[in-house]
Image (cartoon, rainbow, N blue to C red; front, side, top):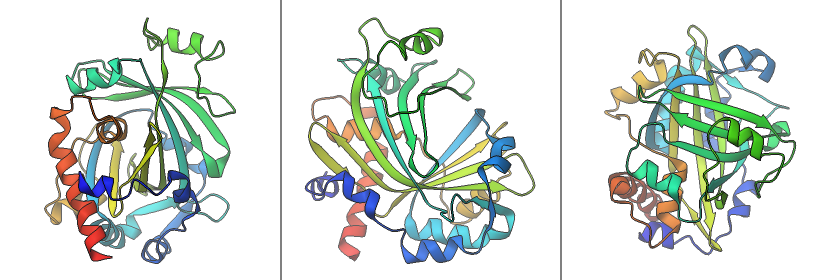
Length: 275
């Protein structure tokens, strides 16, 4: 994992001070804006997700092609927004292991801070047997790093509080661009600048972009997905939590995620060589 180890010395906190690359700023300038209030109609908390893991150059090229088909979320003049997430798991990583076994009904528990909009939520994100994703949210008003009496009833209600208890296992930071389709109930996110922190170490993934198309029925009519397919880019399984744990926990079994890890590291290695 040379691409990961090559960047371990750089702290994740540095990622929040980085401005979006000039190429991204130019690409975003071509989109018309949409506000948070306007976007409420396409929240899609119950949806089907399709993920793509791509090089930054491919993401930028696809954005240029579809600028007339989407609007971009803009908050206080910003179009690339900073997110911080803390993921929870049991002491023996039972939630991660359930994902590794591809168990139906598996779920994640995370606290996510939308820094530019001053919003923080505790979430239970669950995938059902049909492949649909549902998110349950509790607005916390603060970053939760320890599950306490205010969070327990919410987690118990949604069957997300294992007997072994939950503890913070991984911190993740990234910047996100959110696009909303002009013609269909579709929202997509473009995440870049991914950084993971656990056990006192930080792993950065330069040059890697995660695109997630969110639709109520998974019709695959997405203009952005079509632009990626034209570049022979196909959907990939990708979980920030699972990849982050696989990169930061040396002793955990992660065979199922090896194809994604190899691809992720090949992209970051190429980016490092091009610099």
